Length: 310
Image 1 (cartoon, helix red, strand yellow):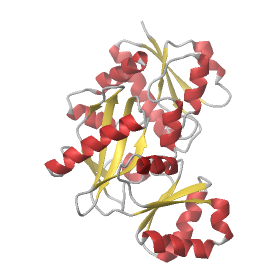
Image 2 (cartoon, rainbow, N blue to C red):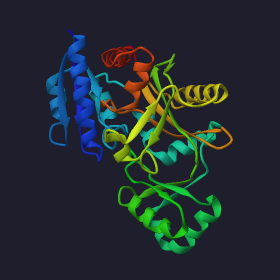
Image 3 (spheres, rainbow, N blue to C red):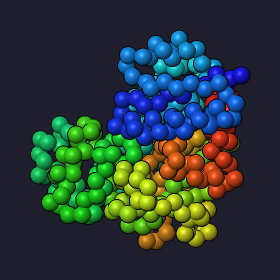
């Protein structure tokens, strides 16, 4: 029997979501027939991973110290296989600024943006703030560079709100990404696979709040996942092709989720790439899998099998 250790919890702002993802994965592994255990990872119990001697690790950690390549690097040193993407892909995709730069290099559409560093920005805050609006216009989206679950994300509708939004984002990260707001449907595409990825049905997301924020994501009744998405066949084809290109360009493995906005001209723009997407009862990847006829348990099993093939 294959021994799978589920790493969950962790040290990031997304700890509670990670615990929920991890428990869901653990239950599914048991049902499928794996010998499964869990470990709420922290700085004091890293040695427990080696002591528990798993055949494979299912990483259900979200955010810093789990989704950013740090745990992946540690597991590579230990020689223990794990689910999802490797160190390089994890680190790149966790940083929204780096992701945006590579999207531009690859010719993949993404919203116009600027990246600001805390020390440099504060040297001339007023002038820098005015230059950002002059370059990108309003409204804007302000994002802490290395957070997930929409933590540290703020919508700015006028100039007077920009400084406070940037200050709030700097509380999470010393680097902040500011991008042009795209007013249109938000879509997400879940992909499973290594060299031959499978694109699952596209989901359109609606939220009770101004955008798909943390509260909308994890509070029952605050959002809807619409399958099929209310988009044209043409947009659907574009989104699928772009998703495949993103997945292969960033060397994703196992599974990932790619988020999009669609503008008024039906042009899709990539927002970001999630290399360890949520696996809670309200999460998007399990919903997309179900729409493709793949149960939660089958999804978890498939992710484990893909990790063993790497």
